[in-house]
Length: 145
Image 1 (spheres, rainbow, N blue to C red):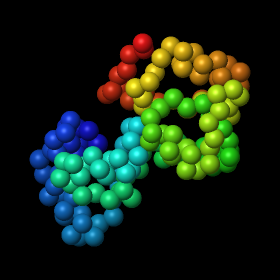
Image 2: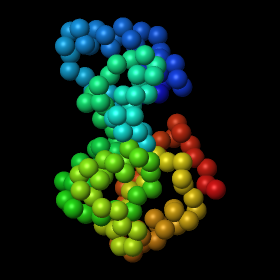
Image 3: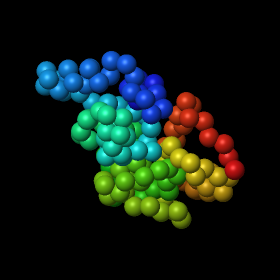
Image 4: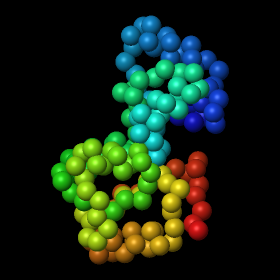
């Protein structure tokens, strides 16, 4: 969404008019984002602070897609997760529990808390048999501390 709807904290030209047109014409729409860090509520509030009214149900994040995928693959599974609230909430909402000992999955999403320790732990869990789901948004590079 950054670079398409807004840049930083500025709505891009033409976006308010386009969203108003969608509402006026009663068009169905969905904003998709590969950023797993935010919940739909947080995206709603972020756009509201910039002057746009986009209801939560119009956002679908990579975190929601990951949670739906894991629920379909192994309902009630557990995961070791590196990521932000958007990812953690999406996983909790579909019944996935957090497990840092012997998880079924290792999920690495957007985050500000990457460290050598957490990535080493994730790697070791995969080596012990956990399936891994990893995505990195190259437009938001991170550095290991």
